[in-house]
Length: 173
Image 1: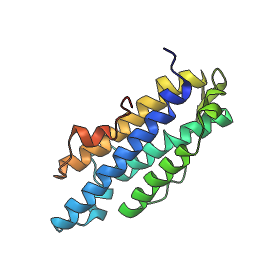
Image 2: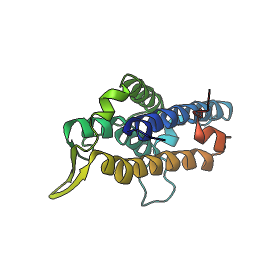
Image 3: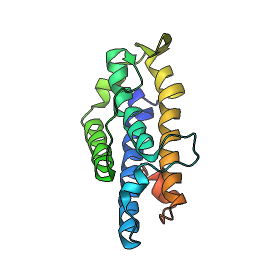
Image 4: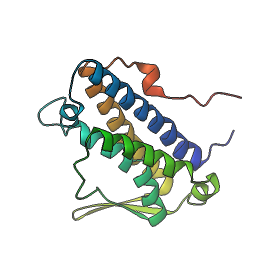
């Protein structure tokens, strides 16, 4: 069996972005039913030295659609000047990221296999191949932030579980 660069990246991103959108929607329903202002959640942190929910969701977008753009361009950097999204803005960000990735063809991504990608932060440059970047840097960061966002919602009582986190599985037809 051969697995492609598209299968290990874009297909996983799309599945998880759908899941994140789903648990954001469930969160909004929960907050409305319990008279909780969803804007309070945007700045919620699991621990004081962790970045807030807003950043977690923004990072999900950055480490998915942003990572693919980085692979295409050969350079990936941390985002600068992130907007102060409200809850609805975070929902729109997830929908937009998923829509962008769904437009990418497997051929486009698979053609990038073996290309160089550099991660730059301040004066540090880390060289990768496209697959090394996606597998060892982007996907772990992506899952870290999807999990942290999920955990913040759970800590606020949102009734989500593992099935919500997994999203729509890519089952055999």
